[in-house]
Image (cartoon, rainbow, N blue to C red):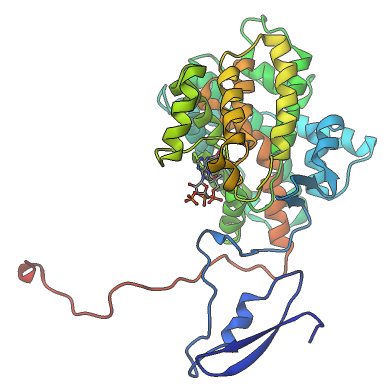
Length: 428
Ligand code: ACO
């Protein structure tokens, strides 16, 4: 028995139990011994939405929500945002260490050689309606990739997993760009492998007739945003990827489940919701009334609050700096004034202070994406491109973890007890 233990007295039976405490947790399955009569299965822990349940041990991302700390593999997010490239960050998340110059070059080159998608993927995308939501198209197309690469089912084979990682990282920007073009009725622009990861993506979205002029400041700003989104430990979409992946399905299907989770307005869809909220407020004079509505329980202040951060989201701080660089290039986004005023009032207001509600990563990112020329319904696609390395790293960590099995929570049944079937004619 380790030194750190927890003693439980079950007042129902008077029995005492000593459970080991490891890494500040007890094993929920240890509660099974805490039973009243033989065979009753013992105690379960009840934790809807996993508010206080660790579902895995992870060595990928560290968050201290109270102190506003975020680190990938031990490296502070601020330093990565300042110094690293997106692919360097992806390598770090996937391999656990920063690449050497040679390793990075090799990784970039390998990704470059996988950027094309099968032409049937284009045909598949053409089947969507002109007004299909980009996230719906993205999750459908990524799920469909599994049919193009049946070898991806070999999830126990390291070399195969490496190949799928590369395919996903290389092809997601291509599909994301095709989705963008589809929404606009523009012909798809094929990948240009003489360009870097970000430059190629931007070119595939904005190039028309040779007229796109790359702006390095905006490209670096986009790269920083992708780095800031690259992982965030056991969030809703990473948990979806892990949960679905635990059935041993291929990574394309698991990642498409992650995209579906990210689509929701309480997760990645919040950046889109922020912009819609700013549109609804319309003018800085409308801010106090809007705050009062939120406090009265009519809707939420989107882009505020976080399950883990109970102080300023460190990513939101960095994003504010990126916003300055971007707006210096593009001119001020008029909605920024409304956002700043919302933040100013909310940070002083007891309702938000008491609940520790601060701006999260999505509060300013949408304004930046809009200034870059991306439409509101496309913001979450950019988030997905950024989050992909995290999803893959979480998926592979789950597969390698001998403690993991197929994810299958328990429930507390509160429905009817057994009752006889009533035939249709006899029902009133
Ligand atoms: N506006 C107003 N009130 C809020 C907000 C908000 N944005 N967020 C939380 N609250 C209030 C709740 O009403 C609740 O108040 P109560 O105690 O009086 O009932 C209290 O704060 C706690 O809220 P919970 O919903 O219990 O917090 P939870 O941790 O479950 O939710 C979440 C976190 C979903 C992010 C929430 O803060 C929210 O809905 N925010 C707006 C959506 C958003 O910005 N999502 C992006 C998150 S970041 C990301 O996914 C990339």
